Length: 208
Ligand code: PRP
Image 1 (cartoon, rainbow, N blue to C red):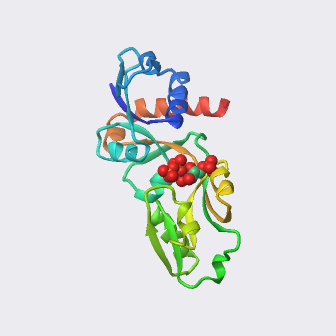
Image 2: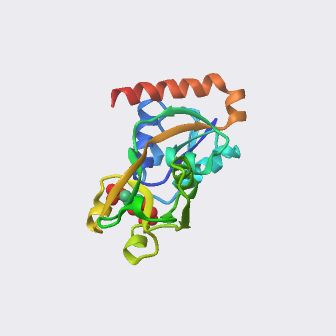
Image 3: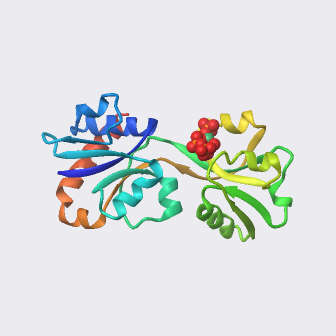
């Protein structure tokens, strides 16, 4: 049986839909309850729900054979896993944002609030700029409003959070989407099975 870590929440439901359409259904997962683990002997899979930012840890350490994680998490934490497929869902972008009146190019030693310190540092290192990274865990948009930072590096999906807080995108860093990832050892021993899953998922992704 293959273990698959799914990200809890709205994205996770879309991810499960893809697995189901690809032939790996586990109907019990749709029941409304607080269970975390679901098995389908018929499909040969065991799913479990984990916090989205933890999926890569489960997969890297082999507690899950496969999982689905956002490219943001993969770039930030650089887990030692294989990335098998871009699922084309959970699309958003990583961007620099700030108050309308702020011109980041004019600020010396820019203060950058973010949940993604590595992505932010790499981006500004490529630009050859020194920055002061302020690591936060959520509600990042508050930082420039309260003067804690000059800008933020964060995920923008619909743009509503920025708009409603009078902030704007200053520059785009990169597009993000959900990726199917595999534990390296599990992949080595079960290549055919994992490649079949990836192939079937790919067919579903292409139909979307
Ligand atoms: C994310 C992100 C932005 C928001 C962007 O936050 O950090 O705040 O979504 O989405 P939008 O462009 O559609 O408004 P999340 O909901 O994960 O909450 P957080 O504040 O705990 O990071």
